[in-house]
Image 1 (cartoon, rainbow, N blue to C red):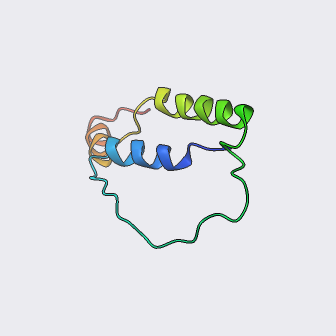
Image 2 (image 1 turned 180 degrees about the horizontal axis):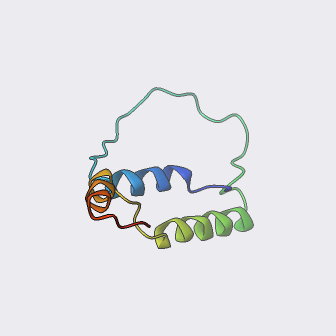
Image 3 (image 1 turned 90 degrees about the vertical axis):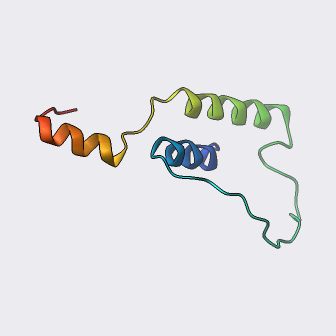
Length: 75
């Protein structure tokens, strides 16, 4: 996948019932040009990747797997 991985992590954490917090970190500015949003093509690809992540069905949570294990249901 070209991009969308951070979004995928946030979505999966939310599906699992986890809380997500954002915190500032020190960093140095990028020395070169962005390879994702530096062009219309890169921006469009990033948007398409993120749409795909948001369309994925919710990931199974651990409690869902435990509940199914007790019923013999297989997914």
